[in-house]
Amino acid sequence: MAACFRKSDLGALSYYLGIEVRQGTEELTLGQSAYASKLLERSGMAECKLCVTPMEEQLKLTKASTVAKVDATLFRSIVDGLCYLVHTRPDIVFAMGYVNMVEDIDGRRSTSGVLVFLGSTPISWPSLKQKVMALSTCDAEYVAVATAACQVVWLRRLLGELIGVEAHPPALMVDN
Image (cartoon, rainbow, N blue to C red; front, side, top):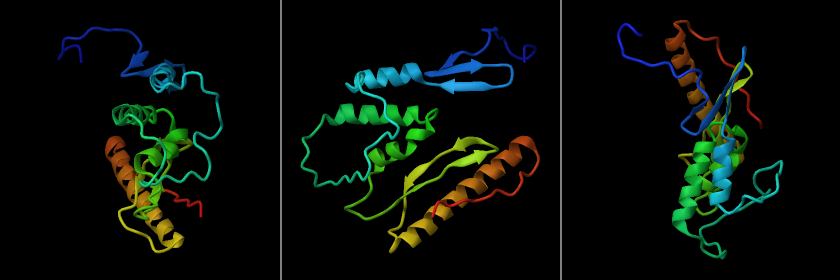
């Protein structure tokens, strides 16, 4: 690269776009603890207590809520921050998707969540509102499986293009 481009060696990567990078001899670890702390401060939750589940169980949100209104600009800013934090925190992706898309009590559409592993490492974890209204929980599960299959097929083709070898057929597991 040095023959074609002018460059300077800044040493090992340690921080990039709010993501902390720790490089070991056999592993690379990404984190966003500083970013998460700033996000907690901005949202007024810097003194909050840790919990195992990042949202309360059986939460139901609706457009007809009687809860006091919040600052919409601040809310959107915090949601955007959480969207960025999901890159290194797949454990909050369900709660994050719930706040962006809400369990659709008003429109009755379900949300599909997919977690794709390459070996034992999660590489993709989309969560999105289903495009169709399922008539039963069984139908919603089929839509979720179809979404997962599409994601896996796309990632398998991408991996094949990147390494030049067709990837092994994936195992598709459903939590039904």
